[in-house]
Image 1 (cartoon, rainbow, N blue to C red):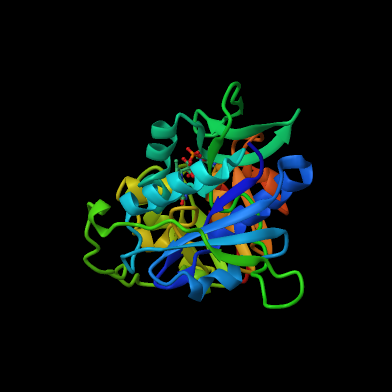
Image 2: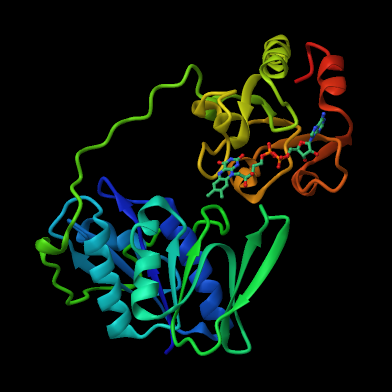
Length: 324
Ligand code: FAD
């Protein structure tokens, strides 16, 4: 077993960003002696996207033509299983995404592969794959090894690696070839009914230059409403961490993070947000991050440019109107 097989994701005929993040991770594995990087793409028209997937460091892009224009988990499972059987890679990388959840754990179980989901780091250590993932809400980092497993399938979190630049047609471009895997439409067991756009939110937080972002440190409706008013006074836009959406205190259109929106404002003022990896994935590229938290050990302070260990309400109430 050797080499890394990246399973690319496409949607509506376009390569999804996670594919390029997986390529970066695969490239690092190759540099650590993990063997050549191959990318598998299963799509109704894979030739339309294969060129871009031939990013630097990718040796081959293998295409499988799906009888369906849209992603179908059972067809994907067939294709990925067949590719693993043919190529015998040491590591298979998929995203930890809604699409991959529909097939990757099933493939790993069926083929008896080493398996890790929601990973944020993968490396070759002593000639074998080693994975890092969070435990207990990311308060601990677990290091995993897979003794006795020839192939290990790792589902990597979005945002864990920088995206590689898409490939072009120049010298050194990866070879694109048909993987020779025929998919039978009868293997599909779900039907794609169509896409429904998320309800338009009241504001687009991805365009706001100044986000006042609140987390579970704000516990109730009164707190949210006071901070909304403070945000208005500061000419900031209110955004939130996921628990506020889950508890019905804020609309999902305001959620920053891995399962929310990615933002890059000039100023990101994080009030009562611990800085879980899934939250950081959506905001760590903000120009200036300011964190207010009562816990000096909160991980948000590791990415913040400025911070204060303080009560968020004390700080928010004291901010002048011309803050940003
Ligand atoms: P907590 O982690 O509970 O932190 C609250 C913080 O407030 C603490 O640090 C505390 O010290 C501080 N605090 C409390 N009171 C005060 C006070 N009065 N003043 C100052 N500080 C105070 N999360 C997201 O945000 N976005 C996502 O998109 C997202 N996607 C996810 C996807 C998956 C697959 C999974 C498994 C999780 C996801 N999460 C996401 C959840 C994530 O793991 C964390 O649970 C979440 O980000 C925690 O939110 P928080 O920081 O507001 O709450």
